[in-house]
Amino acid sequence: MKKRKIARILSTALAISIIAAMAAGCGQNSDPGSGGTGENVSGGEGSYKDTITIAHWEEPTTLDPQAQGKMSCGAVSTQIYDTLVTLDENSQPVPCLAESWEQIDDTTFRFHLRDGVKFHNGDTLTAEDVRYTIERACTNPGSSSTFITFDPENTKVIDDLTVEIKLKSPDASIYDTLNGQRGAIVSKRAIEEMGEDAFGHAPVGTGPYKLEEWVTGTELHLTANEDYWGEAPKTPNLVYKIITESANRVIEMETGNADICLNVLASEVPRLQEAEGIRVEMEPGYQYTTITFNMQDPVLSDVRLRQALAYAIDREAIVDAVYGDTATVADSIMPTTILGAKTYDPNMYDVDAAKQLIAEAGYADGVTLNFVVQPLEEMQRLTEAVQNMWKQIGVETNVSTAEVAAYLAQGNTLQVGIRNGSASDPASTLIIYDSAFGDRLNSNNADLDKMLADAKAIYNTEERAEAYYDICDYLWEEKWTIPLAFKNTIYAVSDKVEGFEFDRMNYLKMENIQVLE
Image (tube, rainbow, N blue to C red):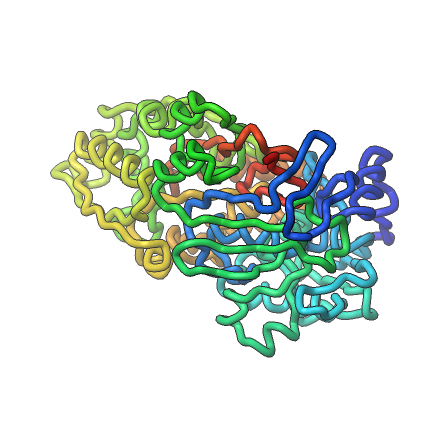
């Protein structure tokens, strides 16, 4: 393949957005920002608060981007770190820490970094930090499955501002991977000096905000990065208040003690919509909820049993009861906002067909399954509904709960679980079906692995979509999972908030947001 100067041959519209991004920070507009003074900021319409208070649904387990496995971590760390590229509304890459790049061949990408970018510890960003980050992402258990096609041994520094990233095989999702929080660039020196565990609670990035204080179980304080390479954040301080009870997060909004509420539950939307001075921001996102099966379990390895379990679930009734108008019944393996999502008739509820299939599988007298879920309100309600529906076909469930760390630690020993996921690229969304992913599904299927690898290697968008349609066909029939719902991303926002830009992943960027006094 001839060398392609990707960053130089973009369309006119994209080129304009690149110029704006090069002048500002990642994903920022070109409006002048306020300084990080810690005092009230005067605007054309009045004074703004010097602190934005965000009601956060869960305490992050770590702010180390390569060790993250949860959206609650990324919601905070997205303020602290930058990535090489970001994606625009059409999922096309635009500059961030890399101001330009070129694709040398199907497995070689050369990135040219901005000059003079500073980490929060004062060190200057170099290509070695990027190389180190890629190597780390490929070896850390929290990110290695996402970076499975990356080749850390042959990724190399060309000079202080140029890094060449190598892939083991072609990967059309490279920009999505580099844009994700697991691809956020970290300071090599900071990690080597303080150690992996300490870094997760004292992160050093190049982002518009830096961590000032973490009060365990209570809140996180972030302050503006005075050396940020882009525009200064418009509000100097952020406070993430950890409030696990959804009703209490709503109260914080109603009383004016919080300006923004993340990850609003469907059950709270009607109340928030009636509240004075609060608006609900809600759009279809990338979030999905699905039942997962351990494919190596001797009981669940029988496709007839899995199909019976799927037919026994009235998904429309479940979605209506748990999510109301804030979600739709899943009619594909992955959200239809994602490339390659093929849709099907979701109305498969048929108890008689389920009973026939479970009898054919040899379980006419019933079977008991172990069902492990996280102790979240949404999970509990879903589990109870599914449990009652499966009883109709003679399936009993031993339900147990486990906090996220314990839940994830069980890995591929789980029999049945419920997964909430969110990703914007088909390769990232379907990675749970790859044998390399390991936990929960425990797939170990060479044919599907090849289908996934082949689809990921296709750079032509239309051809890639067709490949994922075939994968959707296979998974919809085989029922490795039972997709339940595609959920809207929901925020509650004070009417005093300005500069809010919706993010489907719940990774709300805060640097352009201001709150009127």
